[in-house]
Image 1 (cartoon, one colour):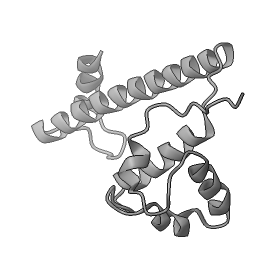
Image 2 (cartoon, rainbow, N blue to C red; image 1 turned 180 degrees about the horizontal axis):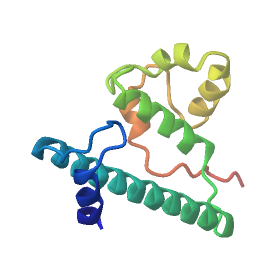
Image 3 (cartoon, rainbow, N blue to C red; image 1 turned 180 degrees about the vertical axis):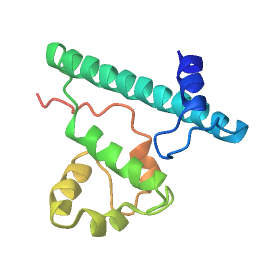
Length: 134
């Protein structure tokens, strides 16, 4: 299909009055453009289908995430963007979370974290199960 398109374009151009064959460079450019546009469309369709699949899956199989796991994910993102370091103390993220910090501080303290603990200790937690009181 690409060969037919290129063959047609080699013999005529819409942007010029005279009909002349395309140069080798113009021909390669057209072939490359066509190839990348089709790859791009394929990627967009694939991404769309994957997104739709995840959406349907999440609707049929809802996953409940512990609020601290979500907080941990946000902090990990801050570390990955180098806004903070794993060796920094937890109190440094107070500036980032602003008005919501009082809530997150009390949550951290309920899991026996202190504001002097390192961010790495928060990121090391694998399961945020709360102990049930008898």
